[in-house]
Length: 479
Ligand SMILES: Cc1cc2nc3c(=O)[nH]c(=O)nc-3n(C[C@H](O)[C@H](O)[C@H](O)COP(=O)(O)OP(=O)(O)OC[C@H]3O[C@@H](n4cnc5c(N)ncnc54)[C@H](O)[C@@H]3O)c2cc1C
Image 1 (cartoon, rainbow, N blue to C red):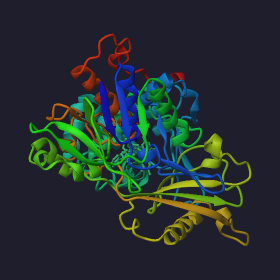
Image 2 (tube, rainbow, N blue to C red):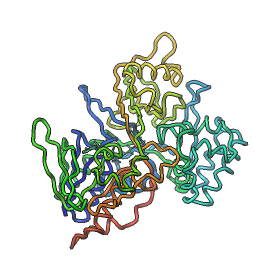
Image 3 (cartoon, helix red, strand yellow):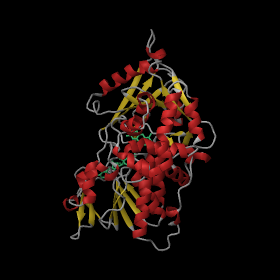
Image 4 (cartoon, rainbow, N blue to C red):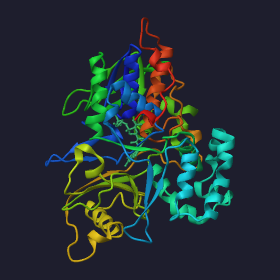
């Protein structure tokens, strides 16, 4: 069966990959000239890569890890030491670590918290552990029920000290959702904590060994095209054309550079666009349906990703760092963490600026200047004194609407992959799946969509259908 998929982000590509396995012929239509959506990357005129986002992979990403294995590229993940590293703003230039010992979960994570002496007192640790008990004992239903509270409200209700918020969770909320604990739904943090507490290698972090476009998306495209599918760039969906009964008749693809628009027909249609363009694209008659009306409750959150190249090495740390800066979220020296970006003499810092709502309209110069001022606190040895590090060049990538803004109450608005329209499906990390707005969520959503299509339109003699129904492989234990 021919399946038209609008959007070549990870959700659209994953959907196409699993449709191929099930014997279908997916055709992915991407509006831009680059693969990957929120993981897209570009090469500048010096041959240096810059990306939409600094992307960390976690051990608790079973569907992403299985996908990489199926593509034969799991060795492209560079696994780092099992630890979480935080800057200490009150002691500029120093770090505090949560080292996770290699013992079964949840004892490994508990040990890492108990052994950290910089960030939490014993009383805070005990209060937080007691506060977490309902989530551990009552499981996912409790976690879902907490969507009515912000994470800050939830912490207060559990009697957890304010300092725990400022010390640990502002950094975690900004890293996971690009917003602060007073704005983010408690469900988000509790979901992540649950995964980390339940899986031995759940909180272990890896970086891809190069740009996501080349090292992750291109192999998926090769897999699809070698099996008869197609991925077309510069093919923006302009309109969803309907039959009289309200089902999809065709995708209308906008003709670029004076070319005619193209009417593209298939047996089934998928939107793997993010939620904001989908809302704009919805046909009038669908907008009255409750299923699609709920999409109005979802909206992408702004975020900014910066790349700063310096004339020297600022750090040897080969890991993700939580800056605990009001301006910045996580960052990494990619000259250490990523094989293709490696440089023994010069640092390339990749930093996420969040929350970004007050910065998204500012100039690149203003954003870079404010970031450099923050670096004086993170690397005082290199930015104070007579011989400060020199910025050689920078790239700023602004995304005004990225993943859905995970404020309280959003869970009820996240749609299923199967819609009330018989031949129309959704994929995307905003759709309902347990991994929230992440790469893992995008891959899982695409897989679920492919599974739903295969169930609705079974292909005779499909020897690979099994791969869709097999439970996902476990965790990073083998990585
Ligand atoms: C700064 C940043 C840091 C991040 N860090 C992490 C991280 O560390 N770990 C993690 O797991 N996740 C991270 N994420 C989130 C992760 O990147 C996303 O959740 C995931 O990539 C979303 O994939 P998607 O396919 O659902 O959506 P998208 O990537 O948004 O894909 C949608 C695609 O649809 C295309 N499209 C839009 N309109 C049309 C149209 N009219 N016609 C055709 N195509 C169209 C878009 O161009 C795009 O390619 C980060 C995101 C950002 C921005």
